[in-house]
Image 1 (cartoon, rainbow, N blue to C red):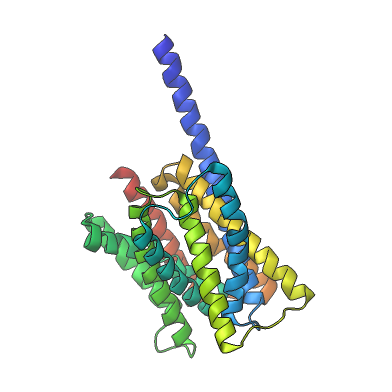
Image 2: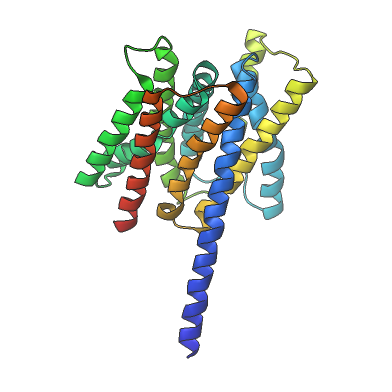
Length: 296
């Protein structure tokens, strides 16, 4: 009876953790969508200045938490921490550039192709298996991306290609993250990212003499953007800590839906039929991939 009671309590705790993990992922998706919308709103500011302000909350808050928890700042796998942060810097530059240049929904949808590149790169670099069903899902996602990109039919093809390049590099970043989770605390990984973003962007801004003093309204949006980014990082870290990845990862595709609403209401961006079908295929592919991972 005691063993049965303990098993029941364990199952209830697992369900509770799963619910909290799902809620954390949904909250993180909302934060990411809000951050992306604020990047779009700040399009008249230099790109690297936006990235610099995005990194400030991480640079200020995360070290205090690390100190309080007595976690070493420098981590264990320093070369991979640096490499992953540098790749992520390029990813964020590409992503923010695409947000500024094309529809918000298109930019976010292209970014959500990254899980498929994670599987491909994990197969090449880590030797993980790719199943036949994966290939069908990849084809669906690829068709969806073509409907959004519309090669040969849109004038702003270059920003779309940059966004796609960022999605591919995100795959590399996530593969590195899979290795780092075995050696380093998630907060150390976030801290490295924040300082790499902040130091590189601020250094380039000083070198180019391109830093603009934001007015009060822009400063407020920049602060809120940084806090939204930090909230997203915390939420996603917590979600993956307490719930299985194959359960919660599908909820990251809510970013597309939230961003579509924000694009319509704040920027009057109405997706065309090609983009709507493309977004739908990417969401369906993401859901199918989630279901497949749950069975493997």
